Length: 355
Ligand code: PMP
Image (cartoon, rainbow, N blue to C red):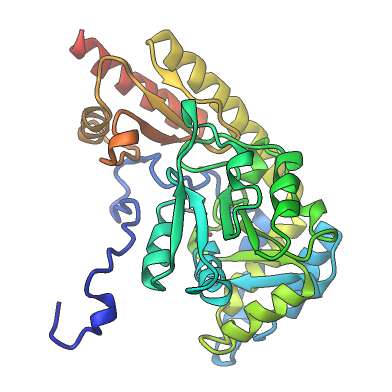
């Protein structure tokens, strides 16, 4: 720390992203990326003509892409906001809607960036414990008088709640914004997007990083009432008006046009998820029911930290946190069948050693 850092940030604990080894020698099951490349149309969209135009700024309104998303989801362009990854969207949410008088609540076990933003903006916040088996109880959020952020499906657990439950929460807090982070919604979950036209306080957040194989392009988006989008825009234009680059916008339009390709990939991932859970069960693992492209699992004989380290030593990366409530568990991204077979082979070796 230099002596110049603002005192406001002296105690800030920054978010720690998952490992991103650049030599690619690992079977990478640690940050929930898709194992599949972008659709062929995406490669065509990022062509020489598009690169030639990189001397010009991108459209700050991102109109072409917002129109594409609006058409895809049956909403209006005024309902759509673009961000540089959904992480940036989360940043805008906390900056735009939360303050001393408008505290924020989120589950105590959830995406690790929520507490970081709460701390960055010095927000009064409530971390609401999950129930038995990491189950999120919707009643715990009803009418609590705070803005709310819920990842659905939740991360790192993979558990989902129903659209009816979300509606109950949104309805019970008409004076607060409820943000539903649907980063993992396209792997068997049920999106609450249809509720947007009914509730002006609901903000749904999605990403191109998982289902749409575009983590490297950095694109997230929100769908919400035009008034909420206008508020987000105000903050965006006060921080970084050109937040989405040209190539990502071109790639994203081609992505939406290739929806069938991605839906097919999701089917494969869901099949690999069922297969992996079944194979792990044969080894005595306990795995939470998952609607995401990852599973949260624990081995009765091998502690989470050891499993993570032993897998890494064998060339397989998964995610583990030292936080006491979840220290027994590992989060494993569901990749291709080949990747899952390598993972399972290494797990079998590690379990055998522990016998
Ligand atoms: N929300 C959740 C629940 C996540 O797990 C992640 C990915 N780590 C994000 C948002 C952010 O994803 P991105 O910034 O790549 O869109």
